[in-house]
Image (cartoon, rainbow, N blue to C red; front, side):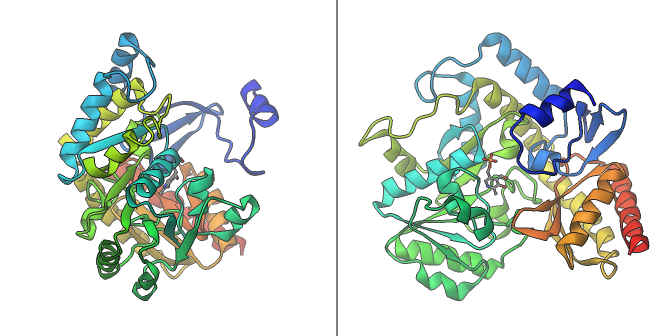
Length: 401
Ligand SMILES: Cc1ncc(COP(=O)(O)O)c(C=O)c1O
């Protein structure tokens, strides 16, 4: 056993008894190169992070430039940091006009927390609404929104009140009333098993929130920045939220999250009290420089269109596998869910596919569903490699009974 693996097992706090455990030597493009000399196709992109793949030269150059210029200098919001300001301006340009302000954080969960605080401050109300199957992160308030009792219950009591509604159920929206500060929703649920709500549901949700004076928060941590075939998943529904939360691909492989909204809503965080929401490392200059370089490439190469094309072609191939152990294939762009009849089959499929050199995983709140979220730059030949590996994995499962 290598020294790194030994230390990993002895000293790194573990998150399960069954880590994937690949020992990463280096990563380039869509490939992970491991200490055992094998390479693996990264079909989850570090779970939606590496939109441009690994080791993108423009991102690396931006990191180097910013590192030489300066690292951390002061808590977020006090000094004028060019990388932060330039990235905020670029995001504001790409988002609908109302989203003129960006608050940078370290992570998706931290951005969710900030968005919840902004909603309480703006509305003066206490209650939040989330949906079954939802995943918004693992800090206490983000966990309170989680749509899966198994992960929530051991940590209760959690911040609240939170009302949880069935996902994609128009009738349930009636319970959004004038006590609700904000409704938080993933426009496409990822950990919930890649579930796509209907356009009618999303329109009704917007309508109901507007009528109740409730803020609508879109968690686009995973769906944002091109993954679903649009720059932002909200574009599929023609619905604009009041706040949008981003992370994952936002930092180009460095840690970065953000919540974005209007002057009016985000402006409330600066007063009564001032400094009521601050962060030491949020919007780190190197993360912002890396993220901006990545975002510029997503924009200039219109990578959401690439994602739409390659995602549709790959889904069409995967659909041919329906009827063997697979019940359904769904998704938008390069966020794809493959649904099995039983969790045990999905888990076996993941293990057999990884053994054939392709990294995939199942979703947290629907463990019958395997989620695919490769770099948006993945080539047709690489997707072909993945398809062959998955096909062989299914054959091995069928042969093993
Ligand atoms: C939709 C969604 N929201 C929020 C989060 C939390 O982000 P982070 O892990 O950066 O805190 C995740 C992470 O997987 C996510 O998928």
